[in-house]
Image (cartoon, rainbow over the protein chains, first blue to last red):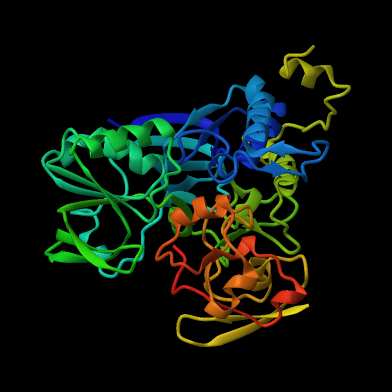
Amino acid sequence: MTDVISTDVVIIGAGPCGLFTVFELGLLDIRCHVLDILDRPGGQCAELYPEKPIYDIPALPLVTGAELTSRLMEQAKPFKPQFHFNQMVTSLVKRGDNDFELKTDGDITFNCKVVVIAAGGGSFMPKKPPIPGIEAFEGSSVFYSVKKMEAFRGKDMLIVGGGDSALDWVNNLQPLVKSMTLLHRRDEFRAAPDSVNKMRELVAAGKMQLKIGQVTGLSGGDGLLTSAHVKGVDGSTSEVLCNTMLPFFGLTMKLGPVADWGLNLTENLIAVDTEKFETNTPGIFAVGDINTYPGKLKLILSGFHEAALMAQQAFRYINPGERLLFQYTTSSTNLQKKLGVA
Amino acid sequence: MAKIIFIQHNGAEITATGVAGMTVMETAVKHQVPGIDADCGGACACATCHIYVEPEWREKVGARNPMEEDMLDFAFDVRENSRLSCQIKVSDALDGLRVKVPEKQF
């Protein structure tokens, strides 16, 4: 069943710019729903560099991606944003002036007046290793994620990778499959030590196989995989018999469905003006790394500025005819009440 | 200043001049060398600036650091001479450095 949610604003992307957009809109009494393809807020700060220090956030000489995210979440909290994680927006259609319909791959439909695209580098999607001919097996024998474990019961499974996804699925699927092989390029794993130990116990008990090497090719026909060709560290080649392969090489950012929404793009970035950061479709805005304009810098602080300015125009769309009073959080009791501090 | 030669998958060579202190990845991006995506912008967090250091340069360029070794798990066709170009700093000693760019980052 499809859920339908009606709201003023939908923000696509829960990275730093999306989160600060919640704050700026909140000060203007505009409530938001925030969607993200990841399972948590933070965007690149959460997925790519949670532990890495950022040095160019004004007034924060050093902050990690994870800490910046949690601070922005705290700042946005008074405005009670509603988050929808693990959702990719698959379509965005303009139905009329300030009337948009958005659909996600998780079967949620949103009707809203304003859309803010704060999608950074695009959608995080699983990396597809460039093994020759792999496309022919995708969706039938090669999968980049596990939706239903049961679908893999009784399979001859090859899992490739050395991170948490690879190891978690090795351990979780091993009891279900007919045979399990884990292939990784080295005998060291980035995954949590617990899962690595568990995997090594399964190997020791003869319940699965660990191979060190890299896939160079695949055999099979009609979309059905029969084996993977593996090159060992010493250059030797061997074959792993398998009818299902799950490669886990991390995530990469792709523009994804945004390209199909009729927005003007410049080199895969959304063109906006520098007064309202609005796209060529009135009511659809783009802030942060995903937009472009003359002089654009892909800095988090630029995205913050863009969010503050776009919020002004969003207010006009959502409250036509109402006068927008510019106020400071330092002196306005009205704003302080909204923030829950007065 | 150091000249860095990026050898494309098809054999074509692109020479870019790097400034000491910059990384090989930054040099490539500045000169729009195809095949160096550098999605994360140099945080050693994506493995999309993977290159192969030509054998005669491997010693001068040095070994991978542990974080880079981990990130290379996300690269494809990792070889002995694989490095992430965001982890190699340009210096005068690397003038003339030759690196191969993989067919595609993924």
